[in-house]
Amino acid sequence: MKIGFLGPKATFTEIAVKKVFPGFELEPYRTIPESMDAIVEKAVDLTVVPVENALEGSVNVTLDYLTHVVQIPIIGEITLPIKQHLMVHPDNMEKWQEVNIVYSHSHAIAQCHSFLHNHLKGVSIESVSSTAAAAKMVMEHPEIKAAAIANELAAKEYGLAIVQKDIHDFDYNHTRFFVLSEQDLDFESISGSSHYKTTLMVTLPSDQAGALHQVLSAFAWRKLNLSKIESRPMKTGIGNYFFIIDLEMKLDEVLIPGAIAELEALGCGVKVLGSYPSIMVDME
Image 1 (tube, rainbow, N blue to C red):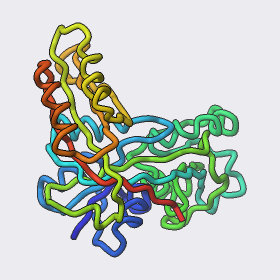
Image 2 (cartoon, one colour; image 1 turned 45 degrees about the vertical axis):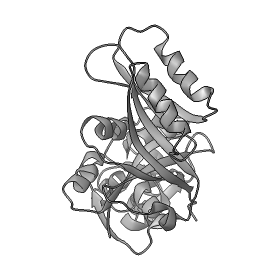
Image 3 (tube, one colour; image 1 turned 30 degrees about the vertical axis):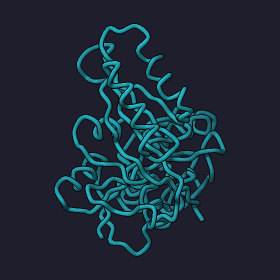
Image 4 (cartoon, helix red, strand yellow; image 1 turned 180 degrees about the vertical axis):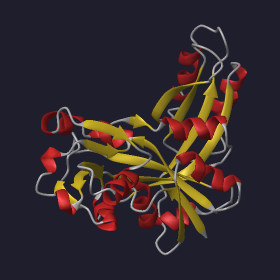
């Protein structure tokens, strides 16, 4: 089985993949959309993409591409603790506080705002496609006084020196990853997890007062626990939104189908994006 992920080597996504799929063939992709396209093109059997960070919220490109462009079922979820470190080329290790620019993914930069503000105030900050891409860039250009925010694996992979560890602003820093596949793969057996979630995409009827309240009521009176509800633009005009709703249970034959039927009777559009096992892994 071949697994795609957001690359290059040593991203947090690769760490999550190796924790759950040890020994499988891995294929890194430059961007999140490219890694999803690989499923559609049958280049990989499944792909793993980041979807939410505890500090910075949702990865919008993942949600938007999954709902607007491709139609790939969610078959699993991996949650990984995130530790961000500041690293430089070994040639610049002694004078790391004199760096002119810091590279990283936009979410990683935001996760380390306080450190950057207090220790590298005035230094240029540039977003790149991934934390590992930032580390690779610093490795390839020792002549630039640059630093990267990335993980320990990236420092080892690209030969960088970590000069400040754990620079994220809050201790509880975790990222969720979706496992996507068009194949009927048994992620429960692979992951060993029997904790399930179900994710729905709900479109409200237009110009109907109290529609969102009615949607939530359909879940509430059935005692269906929602772990997340988020609005995303439909991209059809100002004020037009749909909702991504995560339920803390497996798709059953009664409760969730009953809630969906009630929503559709109210004029809502409902799509099941996936019902899948969820697993939390560690960095060790």
